[in-house]
Image 1 (cartoon, one colour):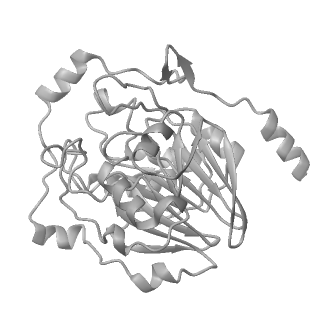
Image 2 (image 1 turned 90 degrees about the vertical axis):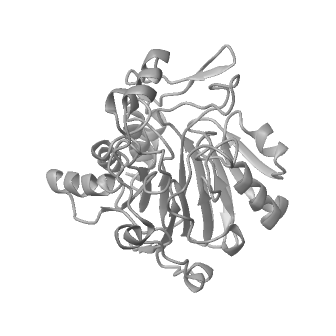
Length: 346
C-alpha cells in the first residue's frame, strides 16, 4: 500500500511556475494581475476601517506576551512547539529542529525605517533572545516577509552556519547580506537535512502571489510556501497567497500536516486583494486542502497599513465563524497572542 501511494504521488501532475523573459509568472487561472487603474482606485477610494484602539485596550483584546525562554530553550520533544512572533513570523520546533519563518523584527516593513507600514504590536522578543536556530525559510521578497535589518541581525547572531532556504532568484541577494549557507529552490524541489531525531525533508511548494523590492525587479525571484517534514511531525508555512489549486496538490503530495501557518489578514477590499491575499474563509479552505490537523492564523494583527481595510479583530472572528459553518473541529484552526507558545500533540 505504501509503495502504491508513493507511486501515485510521483505520477501526480504538479503545476510548475512559468518563467519567461527573465521573470516568473503565476500559472493559475485564478490569478489576475492588478492593473495600474485598480491600484490607483485602491489607494484613492478605500478608507481605514481597522479601528485600532489605544495600547491599553490592545493589551486586553490582542495581548503581547513576553517569550517564555525556558519553554523555547527546552521544547517538549513529544510535540510541535510554535510561537507567533507577529505578522507572518513564526518560530517552530519539531523533531529536534528549530525553524524560523519570514522573520521581521523591525518597527517598519519598508525600504526605510523612516516611512512605510509601522507596527502597532511589538515583537515579543528580540533576535538576541531567540534560541539556537537550524533553518530559516523565506516565502518571497516583499518587505513584510524579507526584512533587511532582521536578516543582518540573524547573520550577526548565528554566523555562516545558519541555513537559509529561499525561492529561486533570491540566493544572490541573501549572499550580499552576509548569509553563508543558502539553498535556493523552485516549486516541488526538496532538500534533505539531518537533525537530532533523524532526516527531515524541506520542500518548496506553490502559492499564488508575486515578488518585488524595487522599481525594476518585479517577479525576477519566485514566491511560494514551505514544507518541513520530519521523522514524526510536519509543518507547512504558507507565506503569502491568493487561493489557488496548488494547495490541493500540496495536500496530496505532502499531507497531512501536524501544524500549518496560514495567512488570514489583509484581504479587503476583495475586488483588489483576492488574487494575492486569501480571506479567512479561503484560509480555512487551504487548511482543508493541505490536510492539516491544526492550523494557526498569521499575517494579521501587527502592521496597521497591512490590513487597515478590515477591523483589526475581524480575521480571527471570521476564521472561527467559518470553522463553525463547515462543521470543523473547534480549535483546529486557531489564532495566538503575540509571543504565545502552543504545543501541538498528534
